[in-house]
Length: 126
Image (cartoon, rainbow, N blue to C red; front, side):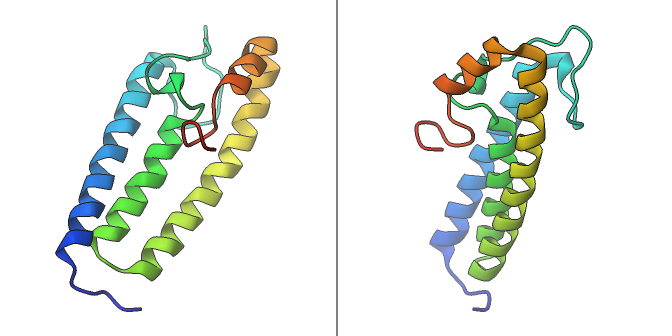
């Protein structure tokens, strides 16, 4: 399906982009100086369970997925939206797998308990 003209979809995409961008920023803010684009444990690293991390284990990744979904929707191209969002989601899932192994090794029972209380990417759902 080609790009179409839909003002409502463009606004929806822009709203999704804005919310996702805010979530990404708040997630980085909650991590503080231990935030890194690399999957790594920082010196004096602590398990973050505040800010958006109260509701989900990987809100920064949810933000990235939402940013891509929102931008794709702004251009009202369903094929691009589904394709790009799906590819980014798969990429984030591989990072999550690696990150959660590392967090479990570093924090043990603290991370296990946190993982049982929270969802991975979407609060109360997934």
